[in-house]
Each structure stands twice: as structure tokens, then as C-alpha cells.
Length: 242
Length: 218
Ligand SMILES: Nc1ncnc2c1ncn2[C@@H]1O[C@H](COP(=O)(O)OP(=O)(O)OP(=O)(O)O)[C@@H](O)[C@H]1O
Ligand SMILES: [Mg+2]
Image (cartoon, rainbow over all chains, first blue to last red; front, side):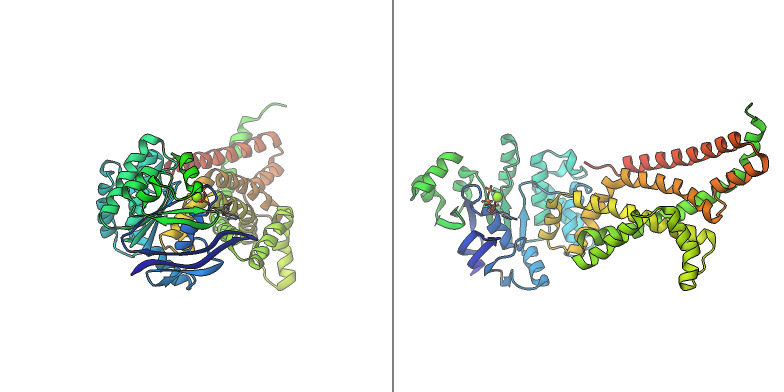
């Protein structure tokens, strides 16, 4: 049973097709890595999945809900699919704890006390027990990104989308974020991850997609694709990111 | 001439009475102006074009005409036009609310637009409605950043209340005018008037400064 079903998706900006007929089916508990050159459409594909971008043609069905459905249906998709951004996008006027409480309070409608409980547990889980009362501006990039992951998890999504979650971080801070993601993967969370962390993709991924020019050029096991690239295109790409 | 200190001090009781009216007018008008301005600002920023255009015309009309003309229009024009007769104080307050709302709306619009788009996306991505995103995230973040500009507009609003002199509202400037007509001590009276305005504005500025500190964010 697939949790994400993408059929014939085209995304067009003006006359430019940024995604050119994407068919893709992702099963529950898969850890899918999306790699590809800049401008190949990775972010666009990810953002189409939770309807931050509309699709021009085709359809995406997430856990039985279509991105072409009405506003209410789209909101349900967004509750199912948590998203983590390259720039963290924490709410700057709220503390780490309040950021994580926000979803349970405002979209799940739980009580303040329960929201606080959920948020504290998640912040402890991502290793931020000591920094709960800090504002985003008082946190390091790695701490901010871990808070952002906790904030997404607090809504209790069934899958998580990551758009280059470590690209804005200094190398020494990436590890702590990757650790959290690794743990999520081990717990069986379904994840779609855009990244340039090739080694992480090999370690953690169950599937690797190579996007090029708006198409899925390769789709396979990370180990196989990475150790023996089937195309010159992928080989060159890997040389550039490694 | 010599500065007549007794004329200076004797003008104070009367002037302070006028200052109370000035404060009252300001404290009623500006919060109301902010509320109206915030509504117009949100419409300017997010409403579909036809509705936003109406708001644009509203702002354009008010910013494009002198405030004295607006005050005159509301006080003398409205009764002739549609039989609405407001006393001077009410007309003055209405004029100040409307006038400040136009400038405040522009500040609000600028503030909303300056909030990074990513925050809005993060809110939507977690399943919030657009209205909730504005109310709980973009609005509060914008507000904190707008405080200096809003404060500036409030200072302008307090000073603009002196224009109500043209419809005879007994605020500070008008009171100064009356006392001077009695005593002919122009230097002393206007000096005293200036000091009282300065004191009110300094107080306002320091309140705003502490508010700014209090809600400070990155
Ligand atoms: N709002 C937009 N309007 C027009 N073109 C856009 C828009 N957003 C993205 N594009 C274009 O779509 C293409 C794919 O963009 P996308 O952000 O998905 O690439 P990406 O693979 O995520 O690249 P990167 O690795 O640089 O993040 C790019 O050529 C980009 O310029
Ligand atoms: Mg991208």
C-alpha cells in the first residue's frame, strides 16, 4: 500500500516545465532520498507533495487524499506530511517550546497542558531538554533545525518531507541533525529527503532517486546507484557533490 | 522684552486643562486608528485585487489631502451632505482616526510584506488556515518589527491633534491661543505650550521604547 502516489505530474512555470511527467509511488516506511543538480526540480517535487505548490497536470494522492481536492483536503494532507525546510523557518516570536506546542494547539486543538507535554517530550527526544525556553535567535543552527523537526513531529504526521535540512548548517552542526533523522528512520517514519549528504543517503536510505531536468532519471537502491552509477550523468553529479 | 515668569507659570493651569483634552483625543483616536489601519493594511496586502483597490483609493484620498481639509469636511461638510451633525470633539476624533488609519495601513502593509515568506509556508505546511497564519504568525512577527514606525506615527498623531483648533476643540493649542488673546504674552504662553507637548511626546516615546524592548525578537 503506497502512502504517496504520484501520477503524471507536470509542474509548469509560465512555459517552462520544471517537472516533466513524474510517476512515483512511495510505500509506508520507505526512506527515499532525492538527489540531483540544482534546478532539477527536487524542491518543487517535494513541495507539490504537501501542496505548497499546485500541480499543473496529473495528481498526487497522499494517504488517500488528493492535492487537487479542496482546501480542507489539502489541510489534511499537510497534517499527514510534516515538512522541514532548509532555512528552519521557526517562528521567531515564540520560544522553542512554544514553537513545538504551536501545531498541537492550533491545528490539532489539544489542550495547553497536553500540548506542553507533547512538546517537552519531543524536545527531549531531539536533545534540547536544556534549551526549551530559548528563542530561535538564541539557538545555534543545529538546535534550530532540531526544534523545527520537533515542531513538525508534534502534529503527528505519518510522513516527513525534508528539503535540504542540513544545507544551511556548518559541517560540525550537521551531524546532530542527521542523528535525529536517523533515529526517526529507525522508528519507521516514512521520509522523503532532498539532500546533498550522499553518505547519509547510502547509510539510511532504502531508495534513491536521481532527478535531472525535471525527470526521475534513476530509481533504485542507494548502495547500487552510488557505488556503480548507471549513467555518466549521475557519475559526474556524484563527483561534484562528493 | 523681558520674559515674564509669572505669566509663564500662570498659564499652566489653563494649558494643562487643554493638554487633558489633547491626551484624551489622542488616546481615543490612535488605538482606533491602529485597529482600522490594521484592517485596511491586511486588505491592502492580502485581499483580491478589486477589494484591495478600494482600500488603495481610501488610503490615496486621505494621504492626498491636507488633514485640515479633512477636519473641515467632517465638521462642516457632513451636516450639509447627509445631515450628520457631529460636535467638534467627535468630529475631531473621527478625523484623527481616519487620517491616522491611512498612514498606519501603509506601515502595516510594509510590515506584513517584510515577514520572511518561509514563516508563512511553515505555518501552512503544518496545516494552518491562511487566516490563522496571519493571525498567529505573520501578524505578531510583523507587529514587533513595526513598533518603531507605529510609534513615530503616534507622535505625529498627537501633534496633529493641534489641528482641531480649526473647529474650536479646546485642546492644548486652542487653549494656548485663548490664553494669549487674554494676556498678550505670546512668548511665555507658546513656550509653555511647547514644553507641555514636548513632555507628552517624551513620555510617549519612552513608553514605546520600553514596549519595544519588552517584545524584542531577532
Ligand atoms: N516560483 C517559481 N517561478 C518560476 N520558476 C521557478 C519557481 N520556483 C522554482 N522555479 C524553477 O524551477 C526549477 C526547479 O526548481 P527547484 O527549486 O525545484 O530546484 P532544486 O532541484 O530544488 O534546486 P536546488 O538544488 O538549487 O534547491 C528551477 O529552474 C527554478 O528556477
Ligand atoms: Mg531546492
